[in-house]
Amino acid sequence: MTSPTASTRLSPFFFYMLTQSSWFLSMGIQFILFPYLVTEVLQESGTRVGIAQMSLQIPALLFMLLGGTIAERRDVRSILMLVHGLAIVPPLALFFVMQSGGLEYGFMIIYGLAMGTLSAFAMPARDTLLSKVVPDGNIQKGVMLAMMAQQMSMLAGMIMAISGNFVEASLLFILQTIIIIIGGIGGWKLPAMPALAHHKEQGRMAAIADGVREVFSSPTIKPVVILMFFVGMFYVGAFMVVLPLMIRDVFQGSITEFAIAFSCFWGATILSTIILMKFAPIARPGRLLGLAVCSGVTFLTLFHFEMNFVVYCCLNFLWGLGAGVTMALTRMIVQMEAPDSHRARILSVYQLGFAGGAPLGSLAMGYLVDQFGLYDAVLFPAGSMVLVLLYLFTRTQLVHVKAPGV
Image (cartoon, rainbow, N blue to C red; front, top):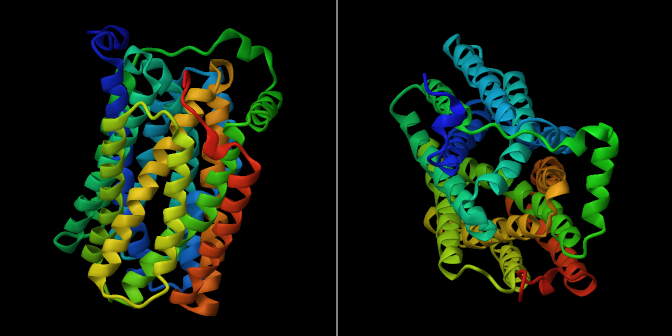
């Protein structure tokens, strides 16, 4: 039998992309099914929708930094294999619950917490692995390709979710399980990635604190992490709560409308990533990042006005263009600026900033929707983001970040 090490000599990056793509393909299915079940099937209120979405996101607050530290102290290949092995349990469990006719809100919360926890350990491991397998050491190109794989897989998963109109929605959780298993096989085919020896000499909590200090001592990484925390709070919170509720309450949509609307957003992120790859390397990513985040304020504000479903989808598409630029450039900046000795921990702080703000935003948006209604609720995150951007543009080096050698 061919050993894992021998089989990966051809292209470790291929198996990395297989693992990356399978995870986000399964997440694309989840991205549609989870809010659909909570809003359409269980008919929950705005606050309870926000809490449910928060259950997917809040484990990042608890485990992301720990996940980054473990990724530097353990073989990341083994971490990914373990995560994929455990990740088949929640969708299988939800399948059997739905088959028995016992779907309840509490089961959705348990599912969200389980998958959110596994994601908190998977993300730092994948991000650490990328810098080790990227072809020719080209970090910008590697990040762009990984982002494109993530976005295209998410989109494909959302399109698969449309089949919930023609088959039992519970069967999609079986499909999700199979996809996760394929990703685990991709992880098994990767070469072993042993930790650097000096990481084992430092205590776990000391290592986490050291990574946080490294982030906040960097004039380029610090504003990116601050930005992504508030992107998670104000943009992701609105995206995960307000937009699904609009599909249900304004457009009376089915799972098809959920998939179409979110596919418009993720399709746009793919397009913007392709355009970025065309013009890579980006000499001044800070300036372009500033424009992209500002566009989000504009499009979020426009959701305040009544519209038909076509206009709603167009706004999702335009918002997605800026989101794709934001996600790609922030990750690229952090990957370029982070030293090898701290990369996993710094990337976990970056992910924590993004994923950590999201549950707070989801909870807040659920409350705001119940208190002020869908249309007025979006003005709160849009206005708050303006204040954040004014600070970052005038008090930090965010818009002045340059690529190495520029």
